[in-house]
Image (tube, rainbow, N blue to C red; front, side, top):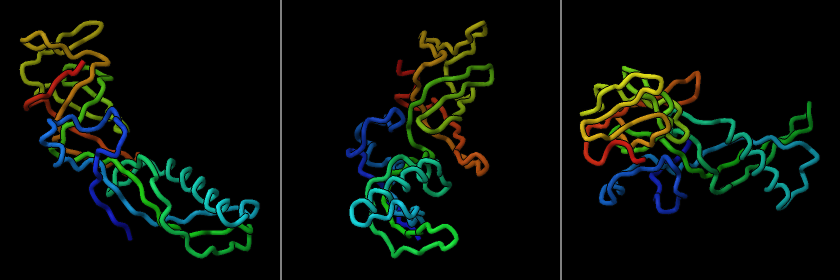
Length: 205
């Protein structure tokens, strides 16, 4: 059981992977989500002090497990735990003495959607196109066919150069539109295909 809703982006810090659409279009962005999720947290006996200390122990364990989870297909990448909403009755594991607590918590997640405009940093350039990193997304591919007016310039440090002398090189920050996504279950991450076909897209700096 889980609940997911879109997040008011005004409450978020200025992450480098947030939308760069014109302000009039921001209300349509869906990449940031608020999710309420169930979780089982295991607390060792020495941390069962009760009260606020117990809540702190549960929260610390939750944060650690949350960080290791990385992402899911349905919710996207886990960004931050916001609140610990409820703590259920603990169940003792007799073989270890640990206590399992079912909890409910709210968190912020980041999931790329088709049609969203994001920006990422170039980390690989080749004749067929270029790869970007965009926040937690390590694999964003922009095909050379989706780079209108840009041509590949080979060399020791290859670049894509436009007729207007705009240049995309290693470590350039590029604004792009998401064309499609694919979830890779074994790696617990998304692969994204993007394009520079559209207004306000291209190198930022």
